[in-house]
Length: 107
Length: 119
Image 1 (cartoon, rainbow over the protein chains, first blue to last red):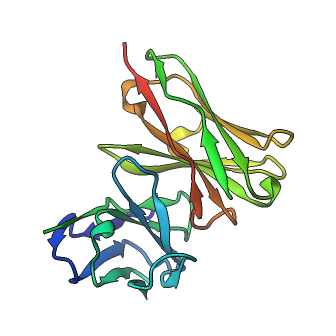
Image 2: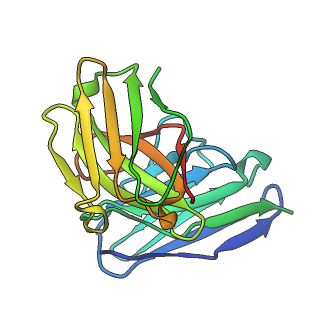
């Protein structure tokens, strides 16, 4: 199975900051990566798919980049409602796998 | 609007079985696939398998092969996930999740069903 490693596991940032989360795959997955946001007590929600395509309705301050084995999710101008845990997921091959998550908190 | 409404929380003893339902509405049921994904504090998000809501074919993660069965009822737009021979490590929130293709991202998640396995 393809393993995804996210870093950092958690971070604390101020409103307006630019936040970057990294997801590394242990083998190449081309652009087959999605990012999700999960708020406490809620289901995950899709933010980005195909590494850099923004899901409809997601604010433009979210962006994804990368290919192969290294990917990033960037939040440009952190907002209070952005706190939660962010997960990457690969869909290059079965079994589909997820990263361990990055918890984002507001300072 | 798209909805995936799951059945309520369950408590089971080790060795028992549980069947979780997921009723879809707001879209064409047979044009999508449903994944089952579980979430535990220790293992994070874990993909269990997929069912084709049109033909009913399934593919399961090797870890769950022989213990999980996914079925669907097109007349009620409902998908079911049954997990057998439960153990304490199966305590988790189980999600059904919609995908436009057999191997792709999830574009919509159910609300989750907590299954607790305890003696």
